[in-house]
Image (cartoon, rainbow, N blue to C red; front, side, top):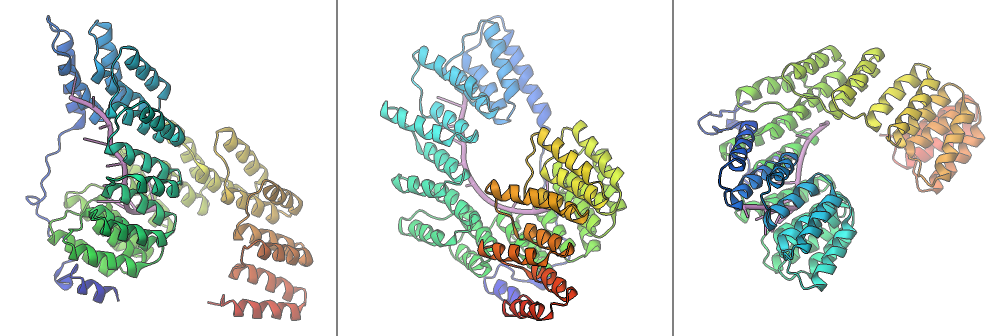
Length: 543
DNA sequence: CATACTGGCA
């Protein structure tokens, strides 16, 4: 299906011709990369030259350099340079103050940003759309979207002019806190709404798995002649794959191509990922060939995605091949690439190779992040190398990588499985102390550990506590509890819990039935066991 | 000289 469809849309015109690895000529994709650091050093020394000139240069000369540093995201440096100007007695202007607001917003120092805003007003400057947009984006970034909306209403009432960016910022803010409905409402009040604004809400709706409304928005765009762009189509393709409507996704690919919108590296990577997840590795690899032919250079994501796909099919050798070959094609692996390798190798039981790669990261000054650590820690735990796992856990702190709920849960699971339940509970206390909230996985690990040690009462306490606090136990939680009750011989109680579970809308899976049926057989309750067996079959769970 | 929203891999 994939192949024929792809051929039809002519994305993959000459699949067979492509060699497994790419004929990339360096001359085609040569990149001139300057070191960011040296550029920023250069900017700072230029600034200092200005600062020490006999005659004070015009203020916008400082502004140019500061603007450059802000674009390079060097906010603390920009702030300190502005402070140096002040110390030298050079008066700053409206633009410099706006730059300063932007720096504080990016550093989440909103109170500083607003005090600079106060200064602007006091000096009699008129804040323009740029200043106000900066503040609204700062508020949104801080999760204070309501405050951003209030600010918007206030300044509009005072007669300030805003611009098209303002509404992009607010729509994005609303979408990112899950208020997509409000974002769409806002979108529809804007006469000059843009493609970008539609892209934002389409993305949110699909990630919330609400594809229905997306059709309406898309046709609305077409009617209003707001042209979907490459981002719109990539978002649609990705989103419809996400909600399981792969056919629809590829329909949008057709449409994109017939509208003469060329897929870019994002689009191709989305297709590669979708094909990999469908275990269509051959097609995924062919997409790589097609993009090269279309002069779109595969990047680190293209290769990493494909590697992850090979691991999904247990094709370690192919994954390694790509890992080794990508560098020769001018693309360096990044932290995620290494994490995919480490994850794939540990899952295949090749922990030592994973550790070697982990060391390799150290050697090349690449800092493993929390996900990398989590991957390796979990791999070590599951292969019984607990003390190595603890070493890594302690190393994280020194390398400025915060342990998260997954880190703690992996270690707690290892402790439970090695009969150190009390240490696991102690670790739970510690994680809370460090501001990390346990999630349903953590709770399940603990309950499971308690049931395994015969401490059913403790497990029931935690379970009840969960219900009291209004949390919804998931199917895993119920299976653990039902299994715990069964192994203590408390089948009637197990069945009562089973009914409660189903009543709450949490439907049994095949594991639930296996637990109950085998417990009933063990108790010689053959009739009941058979009833459950038929129920399982009628629910089509016997696959 | 300042704001600048959107899509992909663990």
